[in-house]
Image (tube, rainbow, N blue to C red; front, side):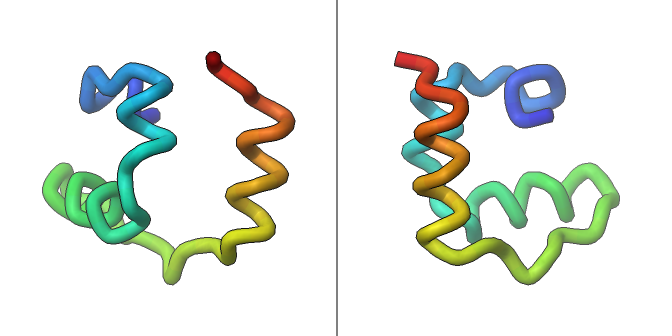
Length: 51
């Protein structure tokens, strides 16, 4: 979603904070979740290594 809607590259997505992503989601009228923990982010980075 960040790439398609906000035009973010994979690097921009992985460098963004949860608060930055939540602010963008809220700006387009959605609700942001409470976020994920660091372990979940690490698993996602391992599964989708865009680099």
